[in-house]
Amino acid sequence: MNLWKKLLLGLALAMNIAAAHAAGGGIAWDKAPGKLTDQASLQNGAKIFVNYCLSCHSATFMRYNRLRDLGLNDQQIKDNLLFTSDKVGDMMKSAIDPAQAKAWFGANPPDLTLVARSRAGANGSGADYLYTLLRSYYRDPVKPTGWNNLAFPNIGMPHPLWQLQGERKPVYETREEHGHEVHAFTGRWEQVTAGAMTPQEYDTAVGDLVNFLQWMGEPAQNNRIAIGVWVLLFLLLFTLVAWRLNAAYWKDVK
Image (cartoon, rainbow, N blue to C red; front, side, top):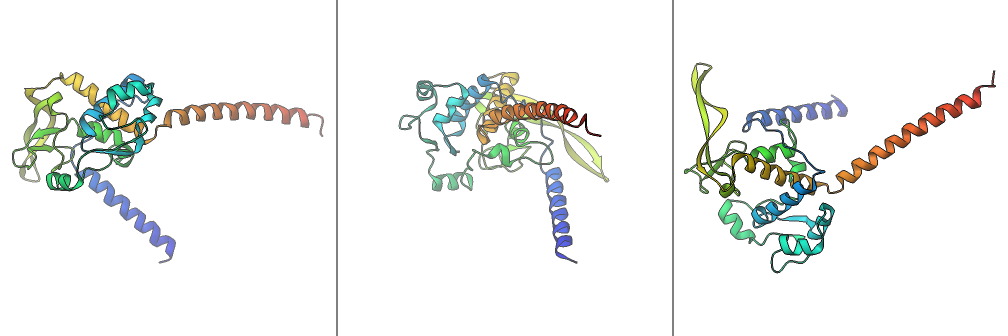
């Protein structure tokens, strides 16, 4: 077997393993709203991120002053998104002690700057994964944190937004598979205790947070897309001009 065949065989094996892992881990992912041009949504997502995520998770590849791209000025960033000792030009770093984080959660909370780009899989985009994850928590007294997650079974992170969502539990049905009874998730949830938001308001807030996380992974994405559209329009116009110029050049040539 030559080198190219070995490489192709290894790639196919890796893809099969990844597909099998994606199919067997957790539930199907819901579609994230995806509103990267909605500045109000992005601003609200930044606010939720700072208040509920940044205490444990850093975004060390993002500076606070980059939030100007979301329509915020420095004073608004200072008043609404900075902690006491932070400055507008600082990186978005959490204050949690790594040793304590490892003792509490079993591992240091990952950096979230690129999380929406790194979590894409066979079930959907990284934004879809995050949108599903933050809406799939349920109480589990067996776990050290008291929480578990259908999208990420045995997750080490407790529910960061439980006060907003309240407590829910998944609804299961019993059915027979291969001669055995199994409990299968129906896709429905039962509200146990109310949160500060209604289910619809919570889904919107999570959509805003995921929207911000997706934007943070590539802040220039909207500009890149806009430039790409203008480039394609230019090429289309240039192709038309070149076609007519070519016709005019060769019309008298026999």
